[in-house]
Image (cartoon, rainbow, N blue to C red; front, top):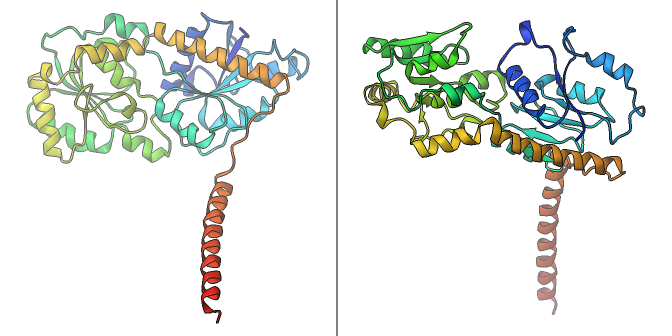
Amino acid sequence: MRSVRFLVPGTTGRFRCGGLLVELQTARLLSRLAPVQVVTYRQRQADHPFLDDLLRAEPLGQVSPAEAPLWIVSWGFDVPWLLRRLRGRPTAYHAHSSGYGFNLPPGVPVLAVSRNTLGYWGDRAPRNPLLLVPNALEPQWLERGARHDREPRPIDVLVQERKSSAYVLEQLVPALRARGLRVEVQSGWVDDLVDLFNSATVVLYDSADYWRGRGVSEGFGLPPIEALACGCVVFSSLNHALADLLDPGHLGHQIGCGSLEADLERIAAAVAQPERWRATPAALEALLSACSEQSLLGRWQGALQAVELHWQSQAAGAPALRSQPAVLLRWRQRSSRISRVIGWLGGRLVEACRGARP
Protein backbone atom coordinates (compact mmCIF):
# COMPACT_ATOMS: atom_id res chain seq x y z
CA MET A 1 0.00 0.00 0.00
CA ARG A 2 1.31 3.44 -0.91
CA SER A 3 2.52 5.80 1.81
CA VAL A 4 0.11 8.33 3.33
CA ARG A 5 0.73 11.98 4.15
CA PHE A 6 -1.61 13.86 6.50
CA LEU A 7 -1.61 17.61 5.90
CA VAL A 8 -2.18 19.84 8.94
CA PRO A 9 -1.37 23.56 9.32
CA GLY A 10 0.74 22.89 12.42
CA THR A 11 0.66 20.86 15.61
CA THR A 12 1.33 23.43 18.34
CA GLY A 13 0.04 26.77 19.61
CA ARG A 14 -3.07 28.11 17.92
CA PHE A 15 -3.48 24.98 15.81
CA ARG A 16 -4.13 22.72 18.79
CA CYS A 17 -7.80 21.74 18.86
CA GLY A 18 -10.03 18.69 18.83
CA GLY A 19 -9.86 18.35 15.05
CA LEU A 20 -6.05 18.32 15.12
CA LEU A 21 -5.93 15.71 17.89
CA VAL A 22 -8.29 13.48 15.91
CA GLU A 23 -6.19 13.89 12.76
CA LEU A 24 -2.98 13.01 14.62
CA GLN A 25 -4.69 10.02 16.22
CA THR A 26 -5.86 8.87 12.78
CA ALA A 27 -2.31 9.22 11.47
CA ARG A 28 -1.03 7.05 14.32
CA LEU A 29 -3.76 4.49 13.63
CA LEU A 30 -2.98 4.29 9.91
CA SER A 31 0.72 3.87 10.61
CA ARG A 32 -0.20 0.24 11.38
CA LEU A 33 -1.29 -0.16 7.75
CA ALA A 34 1.13 1.94 5.71
CA PRO A 35 4.07 4.36 6.07
CA VAL A 36 2.62 7.64 7.38
CA GLN A 37 3.96 11.19 7.59
CA VAL A 38 2.37 14.24 9.21
CA VAL A 39 3.17 17.24 7.00
CA THR A 40 2.64 20.86 8.04
CA TYR A 41 1.91 23.71 5.62
CA ARG A 42 1.68 26.90 7.69
CA GLN A 43 3.96 26.32 10.68
CA ARG A 44 7.48 25.08 10.05
CA GLN A 45 8.46 22.50 12.66
CA ALA A 46 11.69 20.57 13.10
CA ASP A 47 9.82 17.31 13.77
CA HIS A 48 7.62 17.37 10.63
CA PRO A 49 8.30 17.92 6.91
CA PHE A 50 6.89 21.09 5.33
CA LEU A 51 4.59 21.05 2.29
CA ASP A 52 6.53 23.59 0.18
CA ASP A 53 9.77 21.67 0.67
CA LEU A 54 8.23 18.36 -0.37
CA LEU A 55 6.58 19.80 -3.48
CA ARG A 56 9.88 21.34 -4.59
CA ALA A 57 11.74 18.09 -3.95
CA GLU A 58 9.11 15.96 -5.73
CA PRO A 59 7.96 17.75 -8.91
CA LEU A 60 5.12 16.16 -10.83
CA GLY A 61 6.31 13.32 -13.03
CA GLN A 62 9.37 12.53 -10.95
CA VAL A 63 7.59 9.78 -8.99
CA SER A 64 5.59 7.12 -10.82
CA PRO A 65 1.81 7.25 -10.21
CA ALA A 66 1.94 3.82 -8.56
CA GLU A 67 4.50 4.97 -6.00
CA ALA A 68 3.27 8.50 -5.35
CA PRO A 69 2.08 9.07 -1.77
CA LEU A 70 -1.58 9.64 -0.94
CA TRP A 71 -2.12 13.15 0.43
CA ILE A 72 -4.96 13.54 2.93
CA VAL A 73 -6.35 17.05 3.47
CA SER A 74 -8.83 17.95 6.17
CA TRP A 75 -8.58 21.54 7.38
CA GLY A 76 -11.94 23.10 6.49
CA PHE A 77 -11.38 26.43 4.81
CA ASP A 78 -7.92 25.40 3.53
CA VAL A 79 -9.17 22.39 1.54
CA PRO A 80 -9.76 24.11 -1.86
CA TRP A 81 -6.36 25.82 -1.74
CA LEU A 82 -4.58 22.62 -0.75
CA LEU A 83 -6.28 20.57 -3.48
CA ARG A 84 -5.20 23.15 -6.07
CA ARG A 85 -1.61 22.85 -4.89
CA LEU A 86 -1.80 19.06 -5.03
CA ARG A 87 -3.47 18.86 -8.45
CA GLY A 88 -2.12 15.86 -10.36
CA ARG A 89 -1.23 13.93 -7.20
CA PRO A 90 -3.30 11.24 -5.42
CA THR A 91 -5.39 13.02 -2.77
CA ALA A 92 -8.36 12.39 -0.48
CA TYR A 93 -10.46 14.69 1.68
CA HIS A 94 -10.85 13.56 5.30
CA ALA A 95 -14.17 15.34 5.87
CA HIS A 96 -15.02 16.31 9.46
CA SER A 97 -17.40 19.29 9.60
CA SER A 98 -19.53 20.13 6.57
CA GLY A 99 -21.03 23.37 5.33
CA TYR A 100 -17.88 25.22 4.22
CA GLY A 101 -19.48 25.85 0.82
CA PHE A 102 -16.72 24.68 -1.49
CA ASN A 103 -17.02 22.03 -4.21
CA LEU A 104 -14.58 19.17 -4.70
CA PRO A 105 -12.76 18.50 -7.96
CA PRO A 106 -14.00 15.41 -9.82
CA GLY A 107 -12.40 12.20 -8.63
CA VAL A 108 -11.23 13.35 -5.18
CA PRO A 109 -12.38 10.68 -2.67
CA VAL A 110 -14.20 11.75 0.49
CA LEU A 111 -13.38 9.97 3.76
CA ALA A 112 -16.34 11.09 5.90
CA VAL A 113 -16.18 10.82 9.70
CA SER A 114 -19.98 10.64 10.12
CA ARG A 115 -23.11 9.72 8.23
CA ASN A 116 -24.16 13.36 8.46
CA THR A 117 -21.01 14.43 6.61
CA LEU A 118 -21.31 11.47 4.23
CA GLY A 119 -24.84 12.57 3.32
CA TYR A 120 -23.69 16.15 2.78
CA TRP A 121 -21.10 15.06 0.22
CA GLY A 122 -23.44 12.44 -1.20
CA ASP A 123 -25.61 15.40 -2.17
CA ARG A 124 -22.85 17.82 -3.14
CA ALA A 125 -20.43 15.42 -4.87
CA PRO A 126 -22.42 12.27 -5.74
CA ARG A 127 -19.91 11.13 -8.41
CA ASN A 128 -16.85 11.30 -6.15
CA PRO A 129 -15.82 8.13 -4.28
CA LEU A 130 -17.48 8.35 -0.84
CA LEU A 131 -16.38 6.31 2.18
CA LEU A 132 -17.40 6.26 5.86
CA VAL A 133 -14.58 6.11 8.43
CA PRO A 134 -15.84 7.35 11.83
CA ASN A 135 -13.42 8.76 14.37
CA ALA A 136 -11.95 6.38 16.92
CA LEU A 137 -12.06 6.74 20.68
CA GLU A 138 -8.63 6.79 22.23
CA PRO A 139 -8.01 3.51 24.10
CA GLN A 140 -7.89 5.30 27.48
CA TRP A 141 -11.66 5.93 27.34
CA LEU A 142 -12.41 2.25 26.87
CA GLU A 143 -9.78 1.07 29.35
CA ARG A 144 -10.34 3.58 32.17
CA GLY A 145 -13.92 4.76 31.68
CA ALA A 146 -15.93 3.87 34.83
CA ARG A 147 -19.12 2.86 32.98
CA HIS A 148 -19.61 -0.16 35.25
CA ASP A 149 -19.16 1.88 38.44
CA ARG A 150 -22.42 2.59 40.28
CA GLU A 151 -20.98 4.48 43.26
CA PRO A 152 -22.12 8.10 43.96
CA ARG A 153 -20.02 10.71 42.15
CA PRO A 154 -18.80 14.07 43.48
CA ILE A 155 -20.07 16.11 40.49
CA ASP A 156 -23.81 16.00 39.81
CA VAL A 157 -23.67 17.86 36.51
CA LEU A 158 -20.61 18.59 34.37
CA VAL A 159 -20.55 21.23 31.63
CA GLN A 160 -17.59 21.95 29.36
CA GLU A 161 -17.74 25.68 28.74
CA ARG A 162 -16.35 25.61 25.20
CA LYS A 163 -19.11 25.08 22.61
CA SER A 164 -21.83 25.27 25.29
CA SER A 165 -24.83 27.44 24.47
CA ALA A 166 -25.78 30.63 26.29
CA TYR A 167 -28.95 28.79 27.34
CA VAL A 168 -26.94 26.18 29.25
CA LEU A 169 -24.44 28.59 30.79
CA GLU A 170 -26.74 31.51 31.60
CA GLN A 171 -30.09 29.84 32.36
CA LEU A 172 -29.78 26.13 32.98
CA VAL A 173 -26.63 26.07 35.13
CA PRO A 174 -27.85 28.76 37.59
CA ALA A 175 -31.25 27.05 37.81
CA LEU A 176 -29.65 23.67 38.53
CA ARG A 177 -27.46 25.20 41.23
CA ALA A 178 -30.51 26.89 42.72
CA ARG A 179 -32.00 23.41 43.13
CA GLY A 180 -28.97 22.39 45.17
CA LEU A 181 -27.19 20.34 42.50
CA ARG A 182 -23.41 20.31 42.38
CA VAL A 183 -22.61 21.74 38.95
CA GLU A 184 -19.07 22.15 37.60
CA VAL A 185 -18.37 24.27 34.52
CA GLN A 186 -15.00 23.19 33.18
CA SER A 187 -12.89 25.64 31.21
CA GLY A 188 -9.25 25.62 30.26
CA TRP A 189 -6.89 22.70 30.01
CA VAL A 190 -7.55 19.46 31.92
CA ASP A 191 -4.70 16.99 32.40
CA ASP A 192 -6.96 13.95 32.78
CA LEU A 193 -10.34 14.18 31.07
CA VAL A 194 -11.15 10.53 31.78
CA ASP A 195 -10.83 11.16 35.50
CA LEU A 196 -13.01 14.28 35.20
CA PHE A 197 -15.79 12.43 33.34
CA ASN A 198 -15.55 9.51 35.77
CA SER A 199 -16.37 12.02 38.53
CA ALA A 200 -19.64 13.23 36.95
CA THR A 201 -23.12 11.74 37.05
CA VAL A 202 -24.62 13.85 34.24
CA VAL A 203 -22.83 15.57 31.35
CA LEU A 204 -24.45 18.36 29.31
CA TYR A 205 -23.30 18.91 25.72
CA ASP A 206 -25.28 21.53 23.82
CA SER A 207 -23.29 22.55 20.74
CA ALA A 208 -26.12 23.44 18.32
CA ASP A 209 -25.82 27.23 18.75
CA TYR A 210 -22.02 27.12 18.56
CA TRP A 211 -22.03 25.45 15.15
CA ARG A 212 -25.04 27.36 13.81
CA GLY A 213 -23.19 30.57 14.58
CA ARG A 214 -20.21 29.40 12.55
CA GLY A 215 -22.24 28.10 9.65
CA VAL A 216 -20.63 24.64 9.68
CA SER A 217 -21.54 21.36 11.31
CA GLU A 218 -20.64 19.25 14.33
CA GLY A 219 -18.40 16.86 12.43
CA PHE A 220 -18.50 13.85 14.73
CA GLY A 221 -19.14 14.70 18.38
CA LEU A 222 -16.62 12.80 20.50
CA PRO A 223 -17.38 14.42 23.92
CA PRO A 224 -20.79 12.73 24.38
CA ILE A 225 -19.30 9.33 23.46
CA GLU A 226 -16.43 9.91 25.86
CA ALA A 227 -18.95 10.74 28.59
CA LEU A 228 -20.93 7.58 27.82
CA ALA A 229 -17.72 5.55 28.03
CA CYS A 230 -17.33 6.87 31.59
CA GLY A 231 -20.84 5.87 32.64
CA CYS A 232 -22.33 9.37 32.55
CA VAL A 233 -25.90 10.21 31.67
CA VAL A 234 -25.67 12.45 28.60
CA PHE A 235 -28.04 15.31 27.79
CA SER A 236 -27.15 16.74 24.39
CA SER A 237 -28.34 18.67 21.39
CA LEU A 238 -29.00 16.47 18.37
CA ASN A 239 -27.47 18.64 15.66
CA HIS A 240 -25.55 17.25 12.73
CA ALA A 241 -23.41 14.19 13.50
CA LEU A 242 -24.72 13.98 17.08
CA ALA A 243 -27.95 12.65 15.59
CA ASP A 244 -25.93 9.77 14.08
CA LEU A 245 -24.99 8.50 17.50
CA LEU A 246 -27.29 9.73 20.24
CA ASP A 247 -30.58 7.88 19.92
CA PRO A 248 -32.71 10.12 22.21
CA GLY A 249 -34.20 8.23 25.13
CA HIS A 250 -31.88 5.26 24.62
CA LEU A 251 -28.22 6.27 24.42
CA GLY A 252 -28.69 9.88 25.46
CA HIS A 253 -31.35 12.52 26.06
CA GLN A 254 -32.24 15.79 24.36
CA ILE A 255 -31.31 19.03 26.06
CA GLY A 256 -33.45 22.11 25.61
CA CYS A 257 -36.47 19.86 25.48
CA GLY A 258 -39.32 22.34 25.21
CA SER A 259 -38.83 24.38 28.38
CA LEU A 260 -36.34 25.18 31.11
CA GLU A 261 -38.59 23.52 33.68
CA ALA A 262 -38.69 20.30 31.65
CA ASP A 263 -34.89 20.22 31.51
CA LEU A 264 -34.61 20.87 35.26
CA GLU A 265 -36.99 18.04 36.12
CA ARG A 266 -35.31 15.52 33.81
CA ILE A 267 -31.74 16.37 34.82
CA ALA A 268 -32.61 16.34 38.53
CA ALA A 269 -34.26 12.94 38.07
CA ALA A 270 -31.17 11.62 36.27
CA VAL A 271 -28.94 12.80 39.11
CA ALA A 272 -31.20 11.17 41.69
CA GLN A 273 -31.53 7.84 39.82
CA PRO A 274 -28.85 7.66 37.12
CA GLU A 275 -29.33 3.91 36.58
CA ARG A 276 -32.77 4.65 35.09
CA TRP A 277 -31.33 7.21 32.66
CA ARG A 278 -28.09 5.57 31.57
CA ALA A 279 -27.74 3.94 28.17
CA THR A 280 -28.58 0.24 28.13
CA PRO A 281 -25.40 -1.85 28.46
CA ALA A 282 -25.94 -3.65 25.14
CA ALA A 283 -26.50 -0.44 23.15
CA LEU A 284 -23.56 1.27 24.86
CA GLU A 285 -21.13 -1.57 24.26
CA ALA A 286 -22.20 -1.77 20.62
CA LEU A 287 -21.49 1.94 20.18
CA LEU A 288 -18.14 1.82 21.97
CA SER A 289 -17.07 -1.29 20.08
CA ALA A 290 -17.85 0.42 16.77
CA CYS A 291 -15.72 3.41 17.88
CA SER A 292 -12.73 1.35 19.05
CA GLU A 293 -9.41 1.70 17.27
CA GLN A 294 -9.40 -1.98 16.37
CA SER A 295 -12.80 -1.71 14.68
CA LEU A 296 -11.85 1.47 12.87
CA LEU A 297 -8.55 -0.01 11.73
CA GLY A 298 -10.51 -2.53 9.65
CA ARG A 299 -12.68 0.23 8.22
CA TRP A 300 -9.63 2.29 7.29
CA GLN A 301 -7.97 -0.66 5.63
CA GLY A 302 -11.01 -1.13 3.39
CA ALA A 303 -11.22 2.61 2.69
CA LEU A 304 -7.56 2.89 1.74
CA GLN A 305 -7.86 -0.11 -0.55
CA ALA A 306 -10.84 1.52 -2.29
CA VAL A 307 -8.93 4.81 -2.66
CA GLU A 308 -5.90 2.91 -3.99
CA LEU A 309 -8.00 1.16 -6.66
CA HIS A 310 -9.54 4.51 -7.61
CA TRP A 311 -6.18 6.21 -8.13
CA GLN A 312 -4.82 3.21 -10.02
CA SER A 313 -7.78 3.55 -12.38
CA GLN A 314 -7.13 7.28 -12.74
CA ALA A 315 -3.46 6.68 -13.48
CA ALA A 316 -4.47 4.20 -16.19
CA GLY A 317 -6.40 6.97 -17.94
CA ALA A 318 -9.99 6.37 -16.81
CA PRO A 319 -11.75 9.77 -16.77
CA ALA A 320 -13.28 10.84 -13.46
CA LEU A 321 -17.05 11.14 -13.43
CA ARG A 322 -18.36 14.67 -12.95
CA SER A 323 -21.33 15.87 -10.93
CA GLN A 324 -23.62 18.20 -12.82
CA PRO A 325 -24.08 21.67 -11.30
CA ALA A 326 -27.30 22.10 -9.35
CA VAL A 327 -28.30 25.10 -11.48
CA LEU A 328 -28.12 22.95 -14.62
CA LEU A 329 -30.13 20.16 -13.00
CA ARG A 330 -32.84 22.61 -11.96
CA TRP A 331 -32.94 24.16 -15.44
CA ARG A 332 -33.32 20.76 -17.11
CA GLN A 333 -36.06 19.67 -14.73
CA ARG A 334 -37.98 22.92 -15.23
CA SER A 335 -37.48 22.70 -18.99
CA SER A 336 -38.84 19.17 -18.95
CA ARG A 337 -41.95 20.29 -17.05
CA ILE A 338 -42.47 23.21 -19.43
CA SER A 339 -42.11 20.87 -22.41
CA ARG A 340 -44.74 18.54 -20.98
CA VAL A 341 -47.13 21.45 -20.40
CA ILE A 342 -46.57 22.76 -23.94
CA GLY A 343 -47.14 19.26 -25.33
CA TRP A 344 -50.37 18.91 -23.34
CA LEU A 345 -51.61 22.34 -24.47
CA GLY A 346 -50.69 21.51 -28.07
CA GLY A 347 -52.67 18.26 -27.88
CA ARG A 348 -55.71 20.07 -26.47
CA LEU A 349 -55.44 22.67 -29.22
CA VAL A 350 -55.34 20.00 -31.92
CA GLU A 351 -58.39 18.28 -30.41
CA ALA A 352 -60.21 21.60 -30.26
CA CYS A 353 -59.43 22.31 -33.90
CA ARG A 354 -60.65 18.87 -34.96
CA GLY A 355 -63.87 19.37 -33.03
CA ALA A 356 -64.44 22.72 -34.69
CA ARG A 357 -64.35 21.27 -38.27
CA PRO A 358 -67.77 21.16 -40.07
